[in-house]
Image 1 (cartoon, helix red, strand yellow):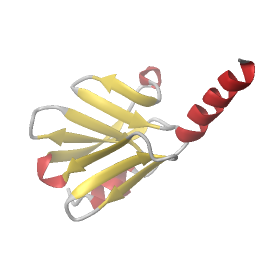
Image 2 (spheres, rainbow, N blue to C red; image 1 turned 120 degrees about the horizontal axis):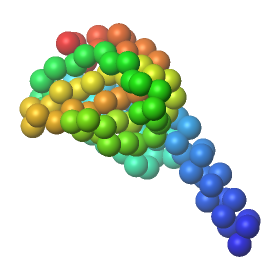
Image 3 (cartoon, one colour; image 1 turned 120 degrees about the vertical axis):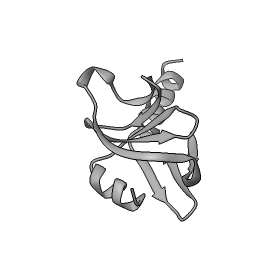
Image 4 (cartoon, helix red, strand yellow; image 1 turned 180 degrees about the horizontal axis):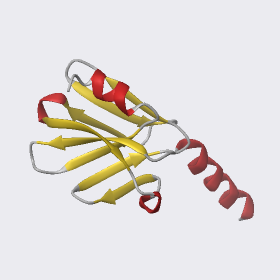
Length: 105
């Protein structure tokens, strides 16, 4: 039982230790190290992109935050994507200005 439990914890820590963000012409693709979970945000759904500094108590991982969701591995910097639905999606990054520039906003 302990070996199984330790293996599950190890795989969870390994998976959520790296978030890859890929910006293409039509979408923003996010994926964790082992490929699950994944998320795609269509660029046509994005109304505004702004850099954001998270408070330390907001935390890390996949979280519900005010007005939407946040995916973050480490650090306090993120980019807030304002969607046409009125919701927001926050992506944690160590280069918020670079991600904002890649999104062309």
